[in-house]
Figure 1 (cartoon, rainbow, N blue to C red):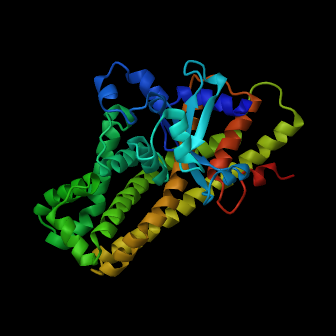
Figure 2 (cartoon, one colour):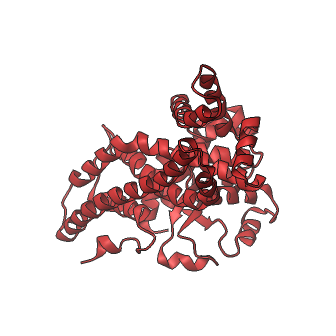
Figure 3 (cartoon, one colour):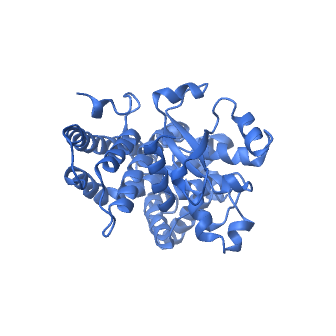
Length: 373
C-alpha cells in the first residue's frame, strides 16, 4: 500500500462505519464484551470479521483485476497489525479474477462457503448504509447482532415516520380518508420496512401484474428509494455546510505553490461535484415521485409497475450517488469536528482526492478535472 493509503487506513480505524465503509475492526474493538457480537457475527472467519470493507471507485490501473470492469467494487482490507494500521493491510476485491481461489488460499474457504455468499451480498449493494445492509442480509436469512449496524433508535424512528407519511396516499387510495387510515398507514409502512408479507402487499403485486420475484426485488429497491429520499432530505443542510467549509478550509503549516494551486482547484471542483451529484440524485428520486404520483393520484398503476421493474438499475446508480454524498458528510464531521487536530497540507490534499474520487462521474476519469493544468 502507498503511504497515503496507509494514512487513510489509520483514519478509518478511528472512524465509525459509513455508507462507504463497514468498519468491522472498530466494531470488534468496541463490542468484544457483548455476547451477541460473538454469537451472531457477520463473518465466522476472524480475519474477515475484523476487516475494513470499503465501496471503492476503481482506478484505471485496477480495472484489469475484473472480467466485467465495474465502476465501483467492494474492497476488503485485512490489517497486517490491527493495533497499528500504519503497517498497512492486504486486500482483495469481491468477485475479482480468481476471487474464489484467493479466499480458499488465504482463509481456507471453499467456493460454496457462506462467507463468500455474505461478501457477494455486500457487493450487490451500491453502498454499505447500515439500514440497507441489515435488510439485504435479512433477506438472505442472516441476522447479525445489532452492534454491526450503527443505526440509532432516533434515526430509525425518524425513518419510520418518514415512510408512514410517504405511503399514506397509497393507504388513502385503498381505504379512504378515515380513522382507520392511521393504523393502516403504520401497518403498511411496517410491512415495507420489514419485508413482511401481508394481504395488502400481495394485492398490490396483483394490481401491478408482477411476478413474485420481480415484485420482491422491486419492493426492496422501493424501500431503498424511500431510505435514500429520507437521507438526502436529512443531509441537505449539513451538505450545504460542508460545501461552504470546503471552500474556506485552510491547512496548517507552509503551503507551497503547487499545493496551493491544487487546493484552489480542489475547492472549485468539489463544490461543483457536490452540487452536481446532489442534483443528479434528486433527479433520480423524481422518477420515483412521478411514478408514485400516477399510482396514488391518478389511479394508474402502469407507471409504478414500470418503476419497480426499472428500480434495481436506478437503485444502484442512486446508491452510488448517495453513498458518495454520505461519505463526504460523515468523514468531514469526523475529521473536522470541534476539537479535532488541525489538518496539514498533505492530509487535506488526501481528503480532497478521496472526495473527488468518490464523487467522480462515471464518464470522467477520477482526478482528471482536479489535476488538469
